[in-house]
Length: 472
Image (cartoon, rainbow, N blue to C red; front, top):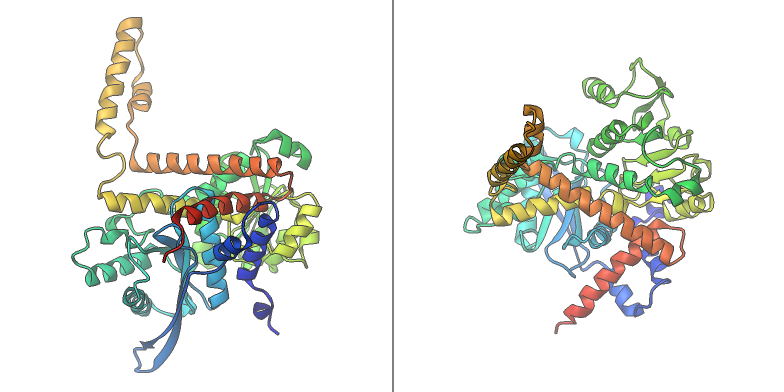
């Protein structure tokens, strides 16, 4: 039996729900309804190659929970896409949205391909055909199901999706809201690119601010001086590392699928990323030791380990060797349920994925709102605010006889841009959710932040289902 057949992400997620349900007084039938996927769509479609040959591709879209509509979740292009993985990721999206109070149900989609084996023209054909299949079955729309980028997709694919959707729905004024993570030219939102990584930083920052928790781990309060290893230097890994480094932590290692770099003196993330883009990997990078088997780096000495690649990276096999005091799950499902039990026994603080990588869906929510309102955030009030602050400064100057410098005026009079407002909303969401989750953990006298997160999320979903009632 293959590793893929043995391991089930969906069963893992359901296991986390069962763990949380033990601490709650909810009807078992309601828990079962919350766990199950509402709709699963699997389909096959052909791709004609330029040499006239054909290939049959398999696509998926899973809508896990309709307790809130629309449902929301990314589309991934990967050879490992299968029904169980998509179900598991869709379920995680449900609990993630509920935890951070974003009013979406969870969904996920994907096509089983290796995107590196196809050219841009072929990827466009695949994306547009995938979208048309979703449109046919009403599995996409601003009020129904709103996809986003995920592993193997980007703003480029989202632009193809919105163009295809608009071609099928020319009369729909809110059509741009059918997908998020779009380029700015297609009414995307400023700040979306770095949103997940920025959210990871906010989450880690909040965790290390709690003095009581840091004392138990034998760590000082705050980011400064913490040693960090990152697995994965894609979008999420890079921005997580960048903001963590800027806050004063030291990145001592970066692991990628084709090798890693380790340097106890600290890795310059911007320089390493530039090298990776030019050379398709870290081999030959002179500032640090090249580690061929980068999976070993998960067990290296550090304060904070940030797995930001794929799921199922920390298992019962390597969990006992983890030396990090904090594991910050930037990826989806990087720690298996069995592994987490070992880590908790060893006193490791695991910041769960369903909370930590919610920055993407939070900012996607802001983008969706922007598309529905058809106006950029800050556009209406920015100049008004600047004028108001200018008058306030002049009043202070007249009353005191003192004068502000031009630099001080620029700083104080500045009106909030769309990016400023997006990051402010993201920070508020991540800060509130962390402390609510941590409070639940302590109130229930449990060790696992993940179980606390599921308790909070399930409570909110249960209330929603009970208030909706059953139709018919």
